[in-house]
Image 1 (cartoon, rainbow, N blue to C red):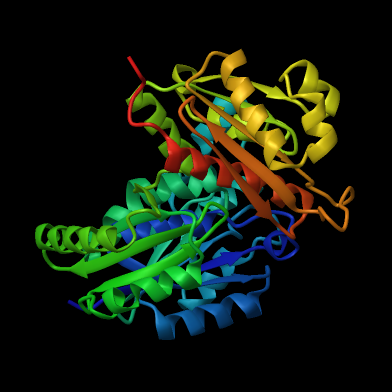
Image 2: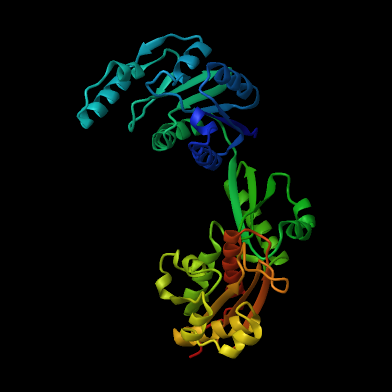
Length: 419
């Protein structure tokens, strides 16, 4: 089965100026993939007739489906409808159902329908109107030389409603598309280059219709297996077989399957094992607690946090010994071990986790430069401390420290609570 390819064209000077972020294309790409249509290119252009025509000409050479957003408003800088009318050698004609929809919206708002808005119901004769139940700009569906062109408003909620109700079902019916299935494997604690080296032989042996993508991000590397074919059941089985092979190659680095965050995976482990946790934070300033509590239901396992930024608070609230701070300093293995052990006892939890470091940009020394950070995990049976050395910005040092601490929790959790 031949692949069906799409191209997205976003129109608007505000996108090019950076005044708004194009979230439409990402959403459209995700939804198109679900019905077996691959986006091959996304192009952003200005509100210029010349640029719109050039983009349409180029997209028509590459794609079976061209989806456009933007430029359908009632003002003079909204050129898309007029350009499309000329491009497809049409005349504008009043579309009565669209006018009725526009009039109903104005009546509901208690506003008089203006002639400018009435003009929005005039559409190119050859297009199939795409109803807009949330706004005053109808969409337009054109077919030419076996290709489909769809123009929609740039307002995200209007475009999404059009796509969901009309455009996606009609594209699915119009084109015979392959089944496309994705499998996501979340990894952490291993660099992308090292991961790729370990997986090279397995990746090279993948069937031609299954592709692997490496998607690095702050937490780690998100692996995505994408399979395409005619039979969804067979494809699902093939993908699951490859996931199982992958799991045997890097078992210690996989923390979840599917769209699951590291903090969510850690929370699930804590909940399933009946464990509780507290944090003692210095350099992360409560960010680790924030990550843990960002998950719904975290009250089942997260008991609280002590943000001990100064040495006085470390001693008074966490019970860190003065001699520990004097001999080793706040940024040291000895200090974070005491912080983790003591917060666990003070808040009566199964686990205590601590962070202390020099986030920067100031405060470093020759012995302990900026980015020197210690983290610790304690559960009553063992205490594990780990030194981190980063050369990043202050905020990235804080974020990376919290994520590495989450991974330390994941790797160190006891199987169950002692009875």
